[in-house]
Image (cartoon, rainbow, N blue to C red; front, side):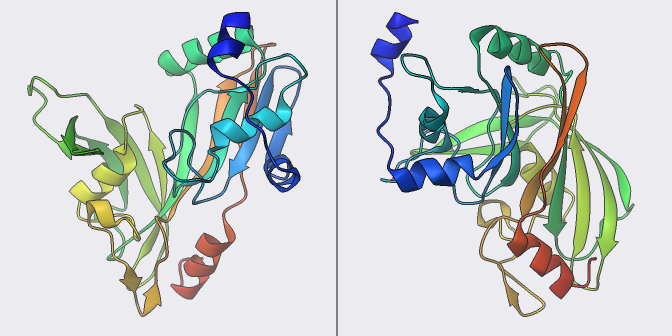
Length: 247
């Protein structure tokens, strides 16, 4: 632990930053801490002057102790539930559960134009990573491609209007940008997703960001049993859903 603290010194946070990240707490106990991440906040590795969520976690560190550890990430513009471990054993336990696909995730996304056909089903398309400068993308590829990673997403339409649809998504694998690329591949990219062809204006309504929300996270708890956490849908996404007649 001393070596870890030497390699990662505590981040100095302002009173406003501490209050902000504490306002995001969705659930906390002795082993885990879950937050409702807002869109626009990087989980890790941000390039700007604003602290990432990983750095803001220093607000929860006990004196002389490490901060909680992120168990997974969400894209910067994805809102919703994100899980951290407060102890090293809990981090190891949850990391193994994630690798063993014992953690289930449910997302909501607004896609355009309209619902897919069929309205529910599965997308089983392999993906490969592609880099351009400092940017990384995922592309659909043949399953026998040397860089292919198997990727499976289950989906169903929960609301539809003439110009868009509200989709519930359950990724069965955890590839980078999986949901975004899979939906684009079936001709229904997530609105606001400029990287993968998502519309920036729908039915006259401007889309300010990627409309993807991590709604539910269910996982085995380090202390035993299962835990299910649900993050309220972000206000901008709820408003857009109403505007487009999806709810």
